[in-house]
Image (cartoon, rainbow, N blue to C red):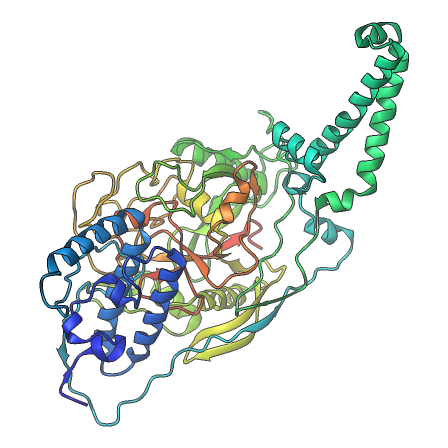
Amino acid sequence: MTDHFDPYHRWLGIPPKHQPADHYRLLGLERFEDDLEVIVDAAERQMTHVRRYALGPSQLLSQEILNELAAAQACLMDRVQKARYDEDLRQRQTAAMPQAASSPVAAPVVPQIDIVSAASSTAPKAVKIEYSANPRPAVPNPAPVIREVITAHRRGRRDVAKRLPHPQSATIRPRGWLEERLVAWSGVQTPRQFLLLRCLAIGVPLGLVVAGLLGGGDVVLAAASYVPVVLLAVVSGLLLAFGLSGSNRRSTFDRSTPAPVVESVPQAISRPPKPQSRQPAWPADAERGAVGAPSKREPPPLAVAPFDASQARAHQEAWARHLGQPVDVTNSIGMKLILIPPGEFMMGSPDDESGRRDDETRHRVRITEPYYLGVYEVTQREYERVMGTNPSLFKTVAGQDTSRFPVETVSWYDTIEFCNKLSVLERKTPYYKLTSVRRDGQTIISAVVQMLDGNGYRLVTEAQWEYAARAGISAIFPWGGTLSSSQANFNGNYPYGGAAQGPYLERTTTVGSYQPNVWGLHDTTGNVWEWVWDMYKAREYQQFARKTAVDPTGSLTGLTRVLRGGSWSGSGGICRSAIRSRRRPEIQLSSIGFRVAQGQSGE
């Protein structure tokens, strides 16, 4: 090995004459590639390759290059940033045409970082590194395809009923061209509405035909003179329509549960959504239960956004009294969780939101069950207390007590294992079951994850996360439409919405350093990305464009898991409440952490 080692040439195959490389060359793409999925796959492929050298003498250098790769990916995935970058790149190409073909094209620095792995945002063109003899080779993390099984719950009618979707969320499947036009014209959404539409479509015309025959072609005269006969014909038509509809109702509405076996990558299978629970109005004189004594009255109303801080607190207190539990709890390791009451809100972003992506289709979501959610992201001290290890990159920062920094560099599988171990520590029944576990050192790189009926700790769904993060606010951030680094930990050189530039820490910071949202949650904007339960699907939201999503749990299959909230390394636009990112569940980056949730029982 030579003394002058060029990592761009050796690791990425970019010769010196093409350095510094533009974003496309860094990711191994053709210039001006426009397919987002191709960009994501290319970035993950390059990062996986460079990460092989993270354990040797090139650790710091590999982190810097990973940072550049993440910055390139973030720029190319943002439509506005990509358009500007491509325009600048084309101009530089045109200016360089008279020069030699090997003349490098300098790439502008666009630090709108989606996911990064190190604090530094620049890397040298060539770095001299002294190697010890016989460096230890690194082995890439395998990601084999594993046969996954959904645990079937067969415990009587109650469990079967729980697996059936509510009629409000059943899928309507019209038969024939005419029915499709009637459904499109009327806008019906539930099986009951569709059945009524069918009856009317058959019964009323049949009654009018009979009336016309009786009246010699004069429908009005027949309707006036032979009212009983016409009514009898209409009722007969309705009964006929009802019989035709009921005879094949199973094929008209899709009420089937997911298949018990799915061939997929090593991912967990989501539990089918719970049926919609009707929330009656809460009478003004309702009995108010004390802590430990749930109220026997009707539950409080849903917290329907928008609402302000005082209304949010009132909702939390009302539901706490109804459940007979406190608004906030602290467990045995000092982790604080706060009650999030059920409610409705608009998920996603409007079409005119700056930085908006195609996977943020706005739609209404109803959360039907209350839950406790961590006030802070899981800290390094909490993680080490439960897991016995601390994988964080920022566990040593000069002059800082990092025990209250969020834990990072954890995979999605690591968070599942943490939830189970914390549940056991708290003498609760684990919420998940992990089988076929494969590890690389102490971290899990693949596993089969099944949901159980435990009362332990878990990850929230993507919908639960955004509902908690927005806290009744329909604005871009929990406090409005602008973001500066005095409000959250992100790259303050790139604020959002016209806010002033601010400091850039280039690392994580102590949880709770910034103001909470109205629920009392800290750091839902910036600091670290947070793993959630859902698998990622780009068009997941579009199915709810015309109906309310009730307790959605995301796609049942996929390659990646969803991340929410932005991080210390991203720009302001990457920290919007609606932003969706995703990574393979075995990925570990210094900008990724998590927070935990628990059901409302607290048992």
